[in-house]
Image (cartoon, rainbow, N blue to C red):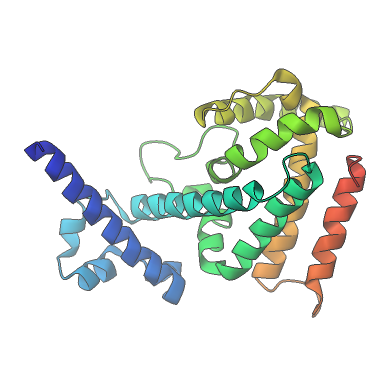
Amino acid sequence: MSQGTRRERIRAATEMEIREHARALLVTKGRDAVTLRAIARELGITAPALYRYYDSREDLLRQLGDDICTDLVTELTERVRGVDAVDFRGKLNTVCHGFRRWALAHPKEFALVFATRADETSEPEGGAAHPEGFEDRFASVFMRIIGPLMVEATNLVNHEAAPAGLRGELTSNQQALAHAFSDEGIEMPAEALDTTAVFVLLRWWVRLYGHVALEVFGRFPFTLINSDLLYESLLDELAKEIGIA
């Protein structure tokens, strides 16, 4: 084993240890507690020493978010694998239920990844950390999960036409979405990413995310004990809209 390879492995192990401590602070004390000084104190080193591994606190938070996304993708992928291959509705429900369960079980991680403005987790200099026109957190979690389902949906569901006034914007986002899939190694057929398909995907995401975010942050307008039933009714409604009820 070369010295260089050994050095790289030691560096990777140290980076992972730093992120593990950062995640523990995030979960137990919240995002504001995740500072280089606090992590250095945990590791018994000086804060400046951490700059050999991460350019800034924002860089550390961004990479921590990537770790969280990877864990979520793994969890959702395993859930989908347990569903009958021909059960499209079952796979779709599994992803939606899995995302909600994960969010409720990991509210601090959810907040960091899905409820943080792009300019709060990007470098203050050097350009944006997110792909133009498409939010990379959404991409990193859902490309490998939703991609195959969108291909199936091309022949299975009804695509409601997008309002004329939205089509121009959807076209630019359609291109960004295609690039995001491609970056994940998924080549999508054109019909799976036409403007109406993107419109359906956008509406699903807005409504599902809206419900989950309100629930995670306790922002329902009144106390709701049976939120499971509300979410289930939302999934039924969405399924009817695309003709897979």
